[in-house]
Image (cartoon, rainbow, N blue to C red):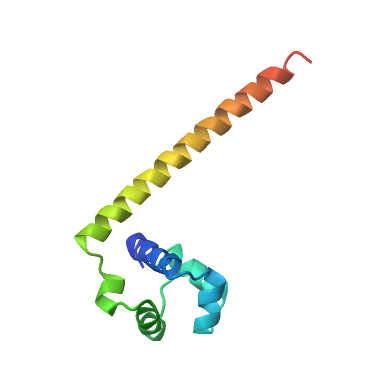
Length: 106
């Protein structure tokens, strides 16, 4: 499964108000299975794809093939997450450097 489809599965789940645990329970699966789908580590089988499409009120085509608008949203969200991770890493590096610098005189 590609990352875009995995992201779409996670976005649809959230938009319908399901936790990973709640969705897993509804489908008779483990939370870990849902988590793996959403991290693109595995793919739902055909039966689960059909169940997801029915549960979310979308066609299989909509579930698996994003529209241009959805692709733009996913691209924006991925870029935003990347910027956030970079900012967090820079903050950790800055804080770590300050901590090391502050302890140097002791």
